[in-house]
Image (cartoon, rainbow, N blue to C red; front, side, top):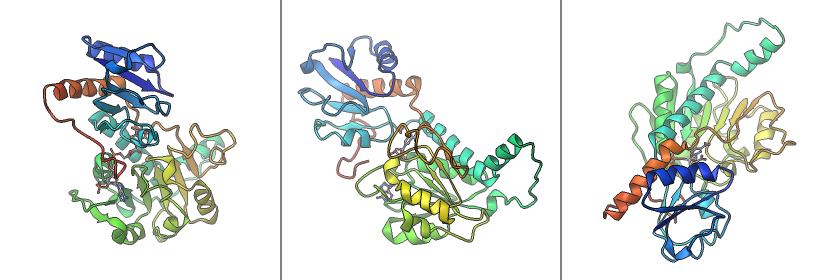
Length: 314
Ligand code: NDP
Ligand code: OXD
């Protein structure tokens, strides 16, 4: 029984080694090595080359090494096996670190003070709002969004969330569906995006949505923090909204094209913080053990956990 490790952009050998030590009774092969396609029962993937998992007649499950599965569903030759995604406290904690860090950076104007320091400029600002005066809206109240929302609330922010179906999270005002979107946006000063990329969410971060964000907040304009996926955002609309003041600033971890091309206008903007799609990395030590355990449980007759709904795309 073989586990196929099919990755691009990440170090395949590190992951393959980790799986070999966790599953010593299996063959673990990395894409590119020779293997018998009939022996492959499991595949782990991060952005595998399209078609690489086709023609595996005994494939029982495909494990995404990330929480998002758009990289799998993009492959129109993906076999019809269950897709299992990552839900893991290490990954969730890392994402909440990113979200709280960036919400605080914008609240406390940290990019401005870094720029002032470079110029040896002492310009103290006596009109700093506190977190409780700032409304954060978290788009996507899933595994990551709920944890981030709770931790933002602990910092004192006034937090709401938006999801497809109604969700109850203690201490968080919740909105859902198309009917709830207007009210959610109208009370949002910092928009945190932790949505999956699906047919329903592609391009949702556009000029029309930005114009519905609160314009009367204490930060002097709405701030966008997108750590979901680049395909959620219309990048020309973000740039225009920043230029026109419909957005005051942005933190972007994900982009339509990754790596972000050297000539992207985002690099040079003082009102944009660019991070290289590492808001929450999948750490092999945390993630591989969980997948190995799922394989053992599945073979002992237990159901797979965190199986994706292919029709919904997440
Ligand atoms: P979940 O599937 O747990 O949560 C997704 C949330 O989005 C749910 O609340 C869901 O609503 C909501 N949602 C989905 N579609 C819609 C829609 N059409 N309208 C409104 N709400 C919608 O995912 P996770 O929280 O685990 O992860 C979210 C995303 O974060 C991943 O898909 C991935 O793209 C991204 N990610 C980015 C990382 C990075 O490093 N930048 C790292 C890890 C993940 P409902 O609750 O009703 O189902
Ligand atoms: C993920 C990611 O989906 O790292 O986990 O983007």
